[in-house]
Image (cartoon, rainbow, N blue to C red; front, side):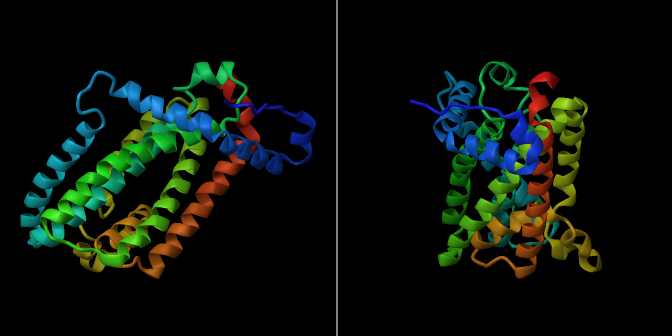
Length: 276
């Protein structure tokens, strides 16, 4: 049973706005029993009365990457054994990032009734969305495992390096949900704007193609932080360690993302119930 009590102190907020914001966020983290249950309930409700449940997403993704891998592999003249796993892992990771960005915009709007009635930290709702995305990612990971087995690709011990990469993705997911959640609650045009941007990013990020395919214009891909976030998970699962440059760009982007989230959370979390 959840026994935490939430007390907001306006004086504390005015004295130390950022430390107060961090404390409030950590209160939400400690309510793990609550946001884990809410995220799991979301999945059960979304696929209620469905026989295959969330595996429909995995099946659709599997069919998509097979068709795409065979077609684009022929266009790029890439060996199927190399290209299909590359696209499969890239699409699964990208699907998770896109879900955290798109659903992050609806973090507080979709939980309007709960936000207004339950005195819980706003971070609970951001963590709920990230946890829900992780559950879907776990289902979709079955597509990666199946593809690697069929094509006899053995990543070896390098696959373990995907774990810290996944942790960095989840941290960015929290940042996306807080930042975009607050902005989309205040400005409702943010949600369709971000939806269009994330669709465009799929085509300009090396998910369906390789950075080396750009030739002399490869710097365009290297300047894209989403490419490096994907590489932290994709490279280990394909048997190679991510480059130091990818780690540097990904960590810098994560730090900026979390700083933006902290700024908005510290200043505007009080106004979320009024904006909904």
